[in-house]
Image 1 (cartoon, rainbow, N blue to C red):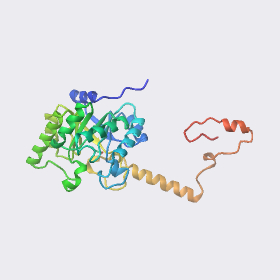
Image 2 (image 1 turned 90 degrees about the vertical axis):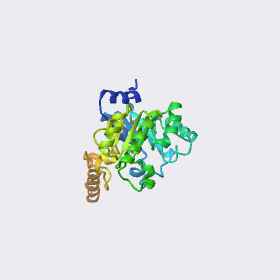
Image 3 (image 1 turned 180 degrees about the horizontal axis):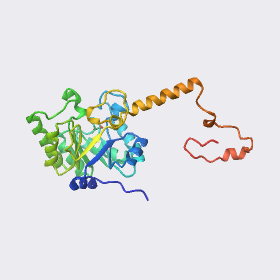
Image 4 (image 1 turned 45 degrees about the vertical axis):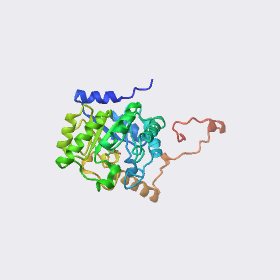
Length: 291
Ligand code: KIV
């Protein structure tokens, strides 16, 4: 029997029990397998894939097709975590009908259990339409990367009393519209603590300090997979980019000196094997087993 997937209610129960909620992004099948094996209860198929996977300088060029494709790969890789997929730029802002159609695709073709969309009060009516239609929605306020040009860069939000009040109001409206949880990105610790205190739904922070109900990180940042810039809030858990570069350099050097592959890493003629056993040899991996 397939393992049961974690539900939005289970995520909410974690807040009620005071249990912190770890979440990371994943964008493909193998990453999803690793993240699930590490015991993460909730995965975000983030539109940050525009930056870390596709090499754009923002999330704005990401399409619904991109999100459907990557979501389906993540769903195939992880059986138990709740999978939340980002609605990309302009897939929900135009009107509720467009939002419903695109959320439908992300759930039906992408296989995710919930969608996430960015914005405060102005997107609350869209969230209401989606939740009324049975779609589980995660909100996202603070730094909303799809609005990077309006915000004038990737900057901390809610630093003044006035902007903090707007964010509190946004969070309450999003909860009221039926969201099951909300991401708080790049806001001061004190403001994140206040929002977390005032909401019944879980807050998931990124660059929002310790007092949110959960934390989310972009997998590439958390694992140090990208060789360039790493945000300070991502922590220092690994430097996989350097590790991979080192391994590839050693491989390239071995190829150049002729020390790779070794005899043990090669296949040899088997004089005993008959032609027919050759053709019926069973495969132990998707790429073939060899002898
Ligand atoms: O796209 C993403 O990875 C996100 C996180 C930064 C929360 O929205």
